[in-house]
Amino acid sequence: MSAPDPAGRRPGPDPDPRPTVPPTRYRDLAGIFVVTALLGNILVQLTYSMLPVLPNAAGATVGVLAVAEFGGGFVLRRRIERRNGALPVPPLVAARAVLLAKASSVGGAIVAGLWAGLLLHTVPQAGQVVAAYADSLAAGLGLLCAFLLVGAALWLEHCCRAPDDPDDGVHPG
Image (cartoon, rainbow, N blue to C red; front, side, top):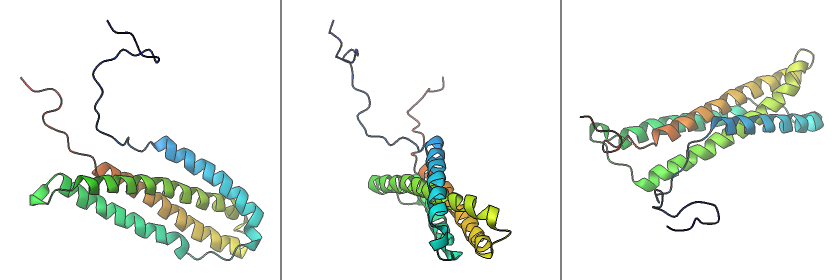
């Protein structure tokens, strides 16, 4: 009988040595969003009078990334499942797509938090200040596009999952 290691575990067969990337957790993205929204609001309160008027295109650019990732998810999923004779996806391409998706979901949560922080400052003033009304519209569009980016990134990450291996699990009979 062998002695346990310092952590109290007994030596035995090693777990699966293949590296895995855990799925993105929604609570992590929510935490990033909330913290960034609070910090963004503080920053906006300190500097709003010095900011230029925000163009609507400032937030819409993130929407372009969301559309690209959403479309890329469909293409990758079709190739991973080998539908209609599609070429297989090289493992490195799939790994890069997962990392892009993870980075985009975190980046989208940060951008969404910043837009939300701006909205927390401008919406109460939108009835009296014309610039606050215009900035609220731009920030609302930016927030929507940032949420779309987070959703598209989570979709891309989901699409990169390998289909269930028929040899894994319980066999009938």
